Image (cartoon, rainbow, N blue to C red):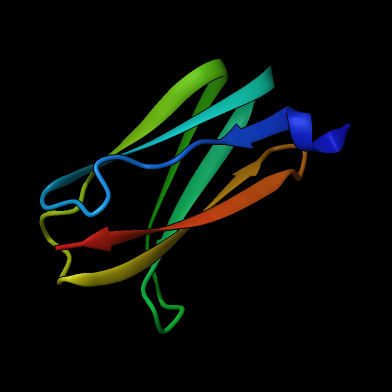
Amino acid sequence: NQNLNLELFSPYPNPANSSLTIPYSTLKYESISLTISDKLGRKLETITKESTGKNNFNLDISKYSSGIYFYNLITESGFSKAGKAVKE
């Protein structure tokens, strides 16, 4: 099952004030990119790291205005998952 190659879990805290943790899990060691976009679809930030198994993207969101933000994780092999979080 291709969906098992990348699992995305609920971000916390949500809503968040200054920091947001986005947990995920991958089956194989590879590069993973996280892109944060605003409600208008403008890309605000992209973070890339290499990992396998359970891991987190820890974001400093203190610079963002209050509102809804969307994030997309994509692996080097092309699997992707998306979610949203609220900044208070």
